Amino acid sequence: MSNVPQSLKMTEAMAADLVATYKHLHANPELSMQEQQTADYLAARLESLGLEVFRCGGTGVVGVLRNGAGPVIGFRADTDGLPVLEDTGLDYASKATGTLEDGTEVPVMHACGHDTHMATALKTAELYAQGTDDWAGTIVFILQPGEEVGAGAKAMIEDGLWDKAPKPEVIYGQHVMNGLAGTVATMEGAAMTTADSYRVTVFGQGSHGSMPEHSIDPIVLGAAMVMRLQTIVSRQVAPQSAAVVTIGSFHSGLKENVIPDRAVFTLNVRTFEAEVRETVLASIKRIIAMEAAASGAPEPLIEDLSHFPPLYNDPAQTALLIEQFRDEFGAEQVLPGSPVMGSEDFGALASALGVPSVFWFFGGNTAQTLAAGPPPANHSPFFAPVIEPTLSTGVQAAVRALYSKVGK
Ligand code: ZN
Ligand code: ZN
Image 1 (tube, rainbow, N blue to C red):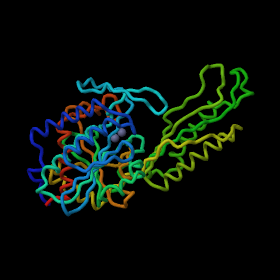
Image 2 (cartoon, rainbow, N blue to C red):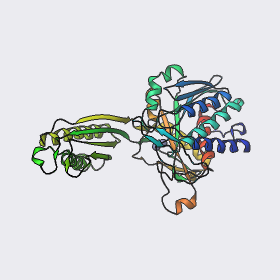
Image 3 (tube, helix red, strand yellow):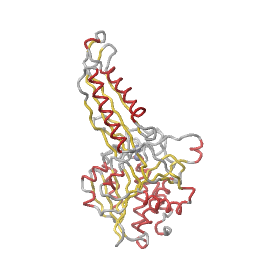
Image 4 (cartoon, helix red, strand yellow):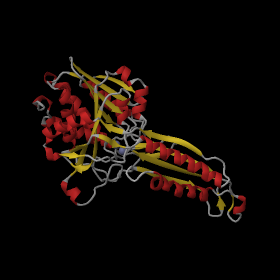
């Protein structure tokens, strides 16, 4: 195990540019799969460093840095913001707006910290572009759009990512999370869940509120579905397994004396194990169909919204990386990660190639913030990682992970 040489460490000027880059990206977020300006910015920065740059999957950007014979390693950062109204009060807060697919104008914020991922990836690329005497091989920087909707990795793969870019033997990625800034966390095996989302349209029969006998009330029917769906996790999933079934929206009706003719709800399912996923999804479909039949209603429409693959950290590669991080940061700064019920489409990039991948988290909070109680988490309008040492830890972790493969 060898330490990262001086040529791959940031100077003061680079650290200052890292912060400026981050603030620029933070103030200019874009919605998933609409990251046009962001992609232009990232491509221009990578081109100026001398990387071979190409677009992939619409707003995806790939930067290939070749430096002689050696291993090919992938590093991924995601690029999208969220439809969240920023309420951090920071002087670099976002005032951006965007338009959702259905035409709704919404505020946009980098509320998941993907700006930290992009800024640290750019600085990592800069370090490797400069310090070419101390490493050999090829690094593929994958700036992936649309993580929040589970569409970006898929779009890049379908657009021929791995036909166009050199094929890495391992792919790394990282995510900022609540935790002490300066620490990193990861674990072997299942790290994040599979997520499946659906929209369900329940068809009833509208009527006057005073004449329920002429109706099939979609609110009563939908409510029965919602309640019964809650029994899947408690009655059909073994207590040792983890699963979540959340109905995140339910809309029906406009007026108290009109029985509407339909109800629409959306649901989100999280699982770790493939068999548990199959059981839960089959139960959902069965309950929805059978509750409708019990009410004499037509078969409801179930539409796919998104699917996220599981995130699996290759055990052998993760063990190697944990050793590298312990050496880099000190053992006490490397925390044992625990599986989270969140989801990521990062895993799809490696599974499309059949190569291992490792994903880790880096903390974004000061000790004082953490002591005051749980800070606002990712996706909160108040999500505000402390800039340093969060950003430099992200750079250091990325540089070290790559150096463990391509270092001389
Ligand atoms: Zn997110
Ligand atoms: Zn995220």
